[in-house]
Amino acid sequence: MSFAQTVVLGALAGFTIFIGLPVGRLQLLGGRTRVALAMFSVGVLAFIFVDVMSNGISIVDNALTAFKHDRGTLAYVVWLVVLLAGGFAVGSAGLAALERRMRPAGARKPPIAGGAEAVAVAGSDPESLALEVDAARRRALRVGLTIAAAIGVHNFAEGLAIGVSARAGAISLATVLIIGFALHNATEGFGIVGPLGDVRPSWKWLGLAGLIGGGPTFLGSIVGYAVTSDPLELAFYACAGGAILYVIGEIWNGMRRYGYRELGLLMVSAGFLVGVLTDLVVTYGGG
Image (cartoon, rainbow, N blue to C red; front, side, top):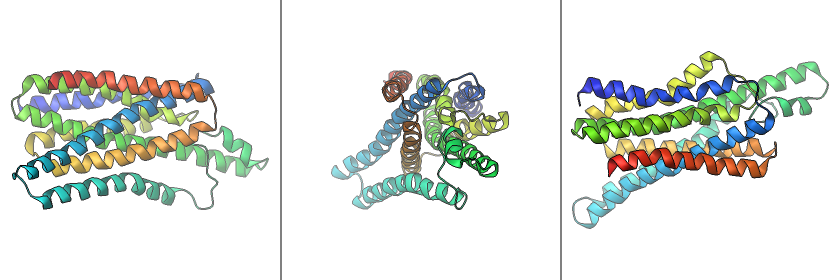
């Protein structure tokens, strides 16, 4: 498979994320449906978390196995472990610190998914009400872009896999990877817009979120075709895992206040199952 073909197909795999994003523009969804969509996205993100961390840990396991059979050094294994832990900390605690710094000083902590509860806490002061609603909206959109960034880091690693397999001449594997990742990325759009609740994003915001979340698959396919580096892959896996875990916690805490606990848990399971089913295509191709 040529470099040009790899780049084009990598872009196709990444930008299927735009399939799910327009759902965020719909205003006909009730509270129950919005909670279901948000918790479905948690299930998808939970599967992605398991997927990226297992891939990252397997890199460390391979290095440890090589050291055990005198084909590597202990220092390299320790370096990978530090990279895994450091990347995870950057993705989780780093995002939490960044989000805290971006939050307006003195603002009340608004609900993650819109302004409904902000109305209740703002009282009768119109100016305070407007500030609370605006803060809730900006925070929801910020969390959505954080999810897109976390997914983008994960998708960069997927793009690396596409590029590496294409350069190695494993055309059938690369093709199945592209199809599998395209299907998988199509569900990730729901993961980005699900937590927005009753906040209606602009088309410009959706375009930005799609570029942040899907574009790295395209970039990763280019890098993977040119460079192969286990530490680089591990760093991206670790950062993605930490970021996804942070985002899951944010969505979960925000959705609890809206109720529908049983429905939410059911939709988490459904989202996780969809992630597993789409990933089976990739696993089949790898076998």
